[in-house]
Image 1 (cartoon, rainbow, N blue to C red):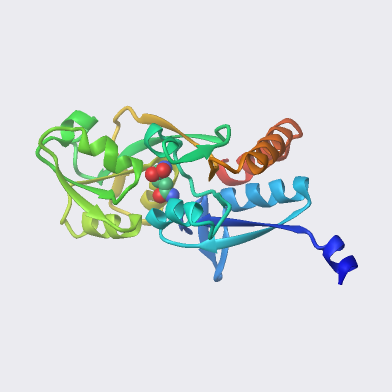
Image 2 (cartoon, rainbow, N blue to C red):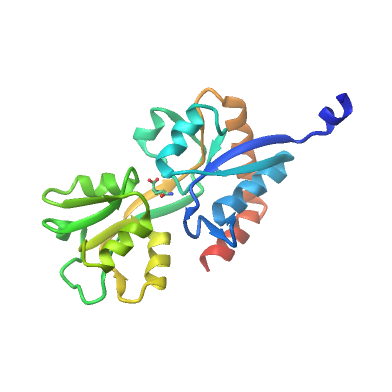
Length: 226
Ligand code: GLN
């Protein structure tokens, strides 16, 4: 009926890949994490229902282009390459690429030291791009971070390059692994939206600014990173 339509909240369909703790992961079968809570806060500001859909990381931008989702939040780095096809909001998190090695390994202290080593990366992640630029690396590409960690533990790789926060999580959960001392390559996470969806971009941009200004953002940072 007309009144029901008038009362219905706007729905925002959001794509993520719940294999990236603490930004998005499954807890008792439910998707949660920093990004998910941030998106729900944006929904509150906009009085919209946030509908989260879990999918493979490399399927996220295609799903956005095909209008299967309207927004992507997935610890996704706003790279120049991706900006050719989608728009990004202001950054909401500064991350970096770090190197995970086995505890006893002191041969890898910088990205340069990866030369000649077998290095695990995740297909299509920014870590893949960073490592691909180093000459003489034997790259092993995996579909998920966990598969890379397993390969490292099984001695099928000498190192894994991954985003800092998930890397810390995996090291904590897998005794025998550590982060190499290397200087990290900085990058920024942002929310992706279709380029021609200017109205939505503007709304989310405003909501994000408000959430950063009113303390909501700081509370989430405190909850997930301190
Ligand atoms: N930040 C990395 C990227 O954008 C990894 C993101 C992810 O795996 N969720 O490629």
